[in-house]
Each structure stands twice: as C-alpha cells, then as structure tokens.
Image: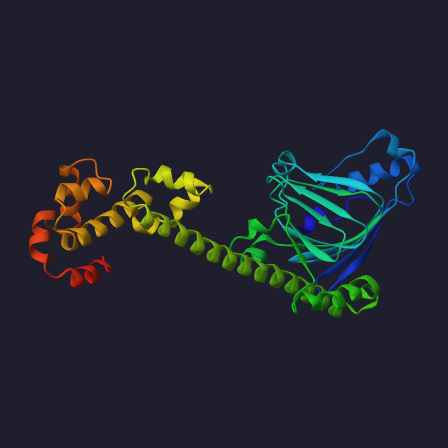
Length: 349
C-alpha cells in the first residue's frame, strides 16, 4: 500500500515522516491547463484508471490530494472537478492493491457501480461507501467533489468482518449511535488535521478507521440476523406447505420449487441438515403413514402408501422398513392399539 500511494515525481510536497506518519501533498495546479487531467490520471494510474475525453482537456482540471500514510493504513483527502475513475479486472490483475477503501463524500455526489447485478451506490447524503480493491468498480463524480478515503489492509478488515467481500459497494449512513460519532471526527480531519501534532493525527485517523470497521461489522451482523430470520420464516412456510400436501401427487422437490419462486439453491440449503428436500418430504410422509397405520385400521396398508405418494406397495414397504425397522403390517400389529403413544413417539423421529 505504501509503495502504491507514494508519489513518484516532483509534483508534490512531502513532509518527513514523524512517528511512522508520512504526509504528502499533490496538486496539478502547476501543470499547463491541457495537461492537468492527464497529470491526475498519471498520478492515480498506479491503482486506478481514469476516463479522459479529448474535449475535457482544454477546460483544465482542478485536483489536489493530501495523503497521510501510516505503516498499516493510509488516509486521502481529495478535491477534484468532475471525473470518472475505474478499477477493472484487467487493472486488478496487474497490481498488488488489495486493500478495502472507505469513501466519505464531504461535498458533491459519488455514484459507484460494481460488477454485481443492480449493485449501484449513490452518495449524496452523509454516509460511508466501502469498496474492495480486489473487485471491479466504476466511480462517477458528476460534479466537483471533496472526498475522504481510508485505505485499510485486507487482513485488518477481514479480522472483524467474516464476509468482508460482501461489503463491496455498500453504504453505511450516520443513523446509529456508533456512526453518529463519526461526523465530529470527520470534521477534525477536514478542518484541523494538518495543524495537529503527529501523534494526535495518527490517533484521530486510527479512531476513525476503527469506528468505520465497527459500523460495517455491526451492519453485517444485523443483515445476517435479518437473513437468518427470513430463512427461518421461509423454511416454516415450506414445511407447512409440505404437511398440507402430503397426499398430493404434485408434492415433489420440483413442485415445492414451483410453489416457492426463490433460488433452488436457497431451498436446498434450508433442508440440507435433514438430508435434502426429497428426504424431508419422504420423512414427513412416512411419519404420516405410521400415524394412519395405527389410527385408520379400516384402510389397507397398500392404500395408505399409495395415498401418500409412494409409487408401489413394495416401494412403500421398503422405505417404511428402513425408517422404522419393521414392515408397515408389523408396525400396525404392534402399535395398532396405542395410537396416541405412537404419535408422540413419531414426533421425535
């Protein structure tokens, strides 16, 4: 990270490192007007691509950047005219930049698209945008913008977010007690950071970084809890559907898929611990068969099996014997006079 963010020419002023903190200032103001956007592209070209149209060059381009580099993180404060910057799969394959970057729009609008379908983040209200530099993105700043960015090592972010890659393109707003602490620190970064002693600069930057990671970690936990609740609700609906249709021919895994238009893999995962969806349906039918064998003695064994969707009497007998250790007829003979006890016993199988 330090090597990629370190300047490589004379268009910047560099402050000698103090306590591991290096400050750099970069500006294109001294360049000829037609070269300013190209100079900015050249500077960011170490880890980003910029879209440059010929008609833009004659208008000049305002861009300045203050960079604070610590051994394990970096903070950037940039002010630019309208610009579009990209990180493509081709660029990712040619460099070693794998940090997570957290963007804060102080002024202006940022519209960011990622490779995921319909994944677009629009920042025009206060919030923090997370980007994984190991994934492609396209960031459009349609107006002059003032943007802060924290570059944090992948390992540091992943240590607090088990599914760190999932935050790519996500925005956290200042709507919780935790995130409402950030604006005060961001104000220090924008207004007072250069004048602070080096140790206070480092402390302020690290505090902001910790708050940002904590905010995304909390959001991820809440989202995972929400997903768990949704999964439990969906599974409950499917189980109720199966119980209500045990005697229907259309009760098959494909029939369940048609009744619940969610991803097939999602439904399969819900019943994975029970041997799969087909096994769960068969288990429920066998439980119901055991109950009918003892409570509906007027029905023939074959009639019960066929009524519960088994293909033949032999198919039903084999499946029942594997589940209960005896044939359906033997089960009826042994438990036929104690159906209440059998029903309770079956609920634990």
